[in-house]
Image (cartoon, rainbow over all chains, first blue to last red; front, side, top):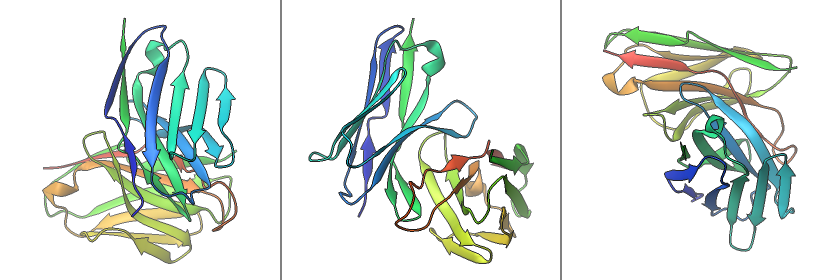
Length: 109
Length: 116
């Protein structure tokens, strides 16, 4: 069945770039997404990418898609303490999204 | 613009008591609606989704049920809560038909349920 995998934790120093990785299995997914969840809050859509694109950039965020390897990454430039959160990767499947387990981004001073 | 509301924000209920969580969406029509549960602040488990009034699809067997009495209202219920029902419940909406649109989902603020 469809599956989305992410590493559970990522620790980076403030000011460095963070790269959060995700692999998915459904090659027919048309959209792939990144969401951010701060403690005690709902999920916030950060960005999404159409499957025929390789890259999408939005201010400090860069999404890279390698469709051949079914690999998606989110790069956050100049990581700040406010970026501390859990980041979820998801792929589209009809009316639903298939979710990864989330990567907790820890910022070291 | 569209907004999604959930209430209550937190709830403490004894085992065996009933449950009713409500979610409403404003600023859109005929949305797809979803209920998720999140345990221990990590992965999302899809409980129910609805593509229209009175249409509910259940993803996992459980003692919970969902209803959609109006186009933009989605209710999660239980007749008797279990300890294992504790968690963070999230409602979400999306716009789009199968094969059309980008399906991104927008989330409410969540309800923290503790069953004691």
